[in-house]
Length: 288
Image 1: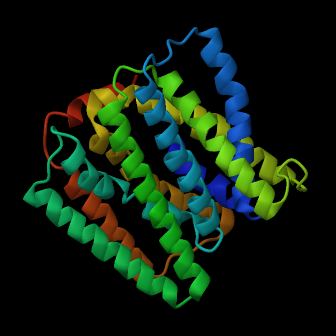
Image 2 (image 1 turned 135 degrees about the vertical axis):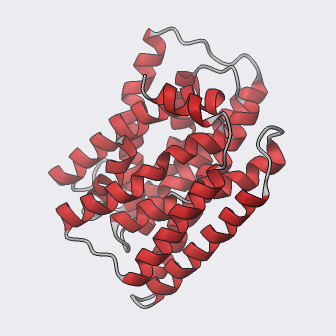
């Protein structure tokens, strides 16, 4: 439910502030919360250099590349469509998991779901071409962001088991902040000197506290318990709520082609979810 609302606040924020600067400010706020909390909790830190490398690398991919791509792309498409395109993440995670995780292999059902998801993305891309090059490019960059999320989650599942969720979350934020802030400074200007509207500040704060701190911590707490693909499946409820919020607050609409593509993606995610005992623990833990 938290992630269902982030797309609205993301759209509100990047309307007033350059996209990467907005991402950098979101991380600044989140870091100011997570570092003191991690220290106060005396969170056990990774002991091996390889574990730190995994945290740093996935942080740059998940919170650096993904945030930059996502923020840039969502300026040119609706918040609901952004949510739909990011919801394809489990299909991409399935591909990475098949090669990197021994317990999450491809099946015919999941392969069919993956093909359906690709078809849904193709329909949306084709639809966005009718709205100009920026709408199409925005859709592509948001989808590439979903690829980044999928890869990072699978790598964390494979190589960061046993590390405290707070250590992972805080380490990833610190790792992503440097490249994000540097890029924003060089290309968009000092993020701290940009004229921030009240809407942008509220949006960045909301995304930092709920979207980055609370949701990220819960994600990494659940990850070793339910699996990378099943965890990402929980996002299946995001697009419908995000579309409704976008229509209610921003007067966004979705035409027939985009709706068909979105439906294909949601069915794809359902197929990728498959059947298995992991889904019951996922639903149980998510209620705690």
